[in-house]
Image (tube, rainbow, N blue to C red; front, side, top):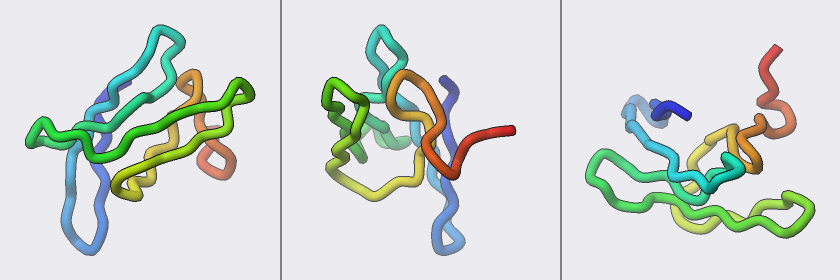
Length: 71
């Protein structure tokens, strides 16, 4: 997965995902190499996030979530 550029309040930030072997996003790292958000999943793919609220669509098994599905 490529880095994501997120714009909020007129400021853009770049985040790189750290993934496991299934492609699930475990964390998003900012341009300062600091973990901005961490994700945990239960066996059914339900997510628990901690850290900044970053609207990153690809989480469990590299699939887009809910209303953020691509055509």
